[in-house]
Amino acid sequence: MTVKPKKRGRPSKSGSGLSQKMIVDAAKALMQQQGSVPSIRKLAAELGVDAMAIYYYFSNKEELLEAVAISLVEGIYQPAGLAPWQEELTELGWSYLTLLSDYPGLLETLLKMRSNGPAEVFTTRFEQVISDIGLVDETQRHAVNLFADYLHGFAFSMQFTTIEHEEKKAIYDGSISLYLHALSPVAMTGCN
Image (cartoon, rainbow, N blue to C red; front, side):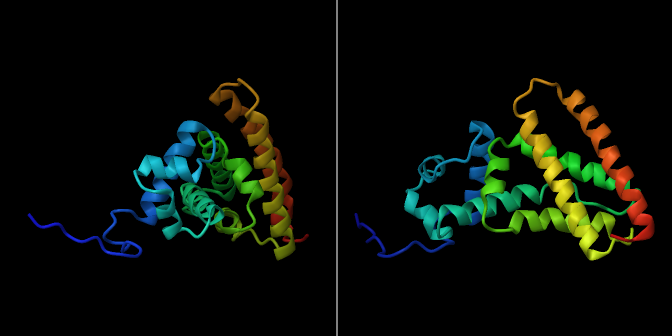
């Protein structure tokens, strides 16, 4: 019987069976299950690898969290441009709130991040929705900031309530209609 000698050094990315996508997917699953961002050790245990294997693919935990957050935010509503902008914006906001509800700990992670990757995904989707309504750049920036801040505040407050999903949606629909109503005259004039 011959024993294969072990290769020294880092494993090749293709040979280890581990990938960035596998790590991100496992982190998302753990985040949803445990209601918070998993530790590197817990993530490694879930994947059946040494914690240092994670650092082979991500230089630090912040880089991993950014990849996880971007992956999650990329799953929100993708505007198709087929419905009126008000409906598209309502759907975008609700899908984001649903994501934040499904992944406890994500809101805090997003707000503490130093990078803008996840915010850029959301902003791009927002801009796709309102691209044809003629807002000047500064007004558009204020509009997305107000919308994101409202969604974050709504998500935060809903963490501490026992309100059912349908009632949350009704509250959201009422609030967002006020935002859309306020944005409509600005959209008609394009002014700031």
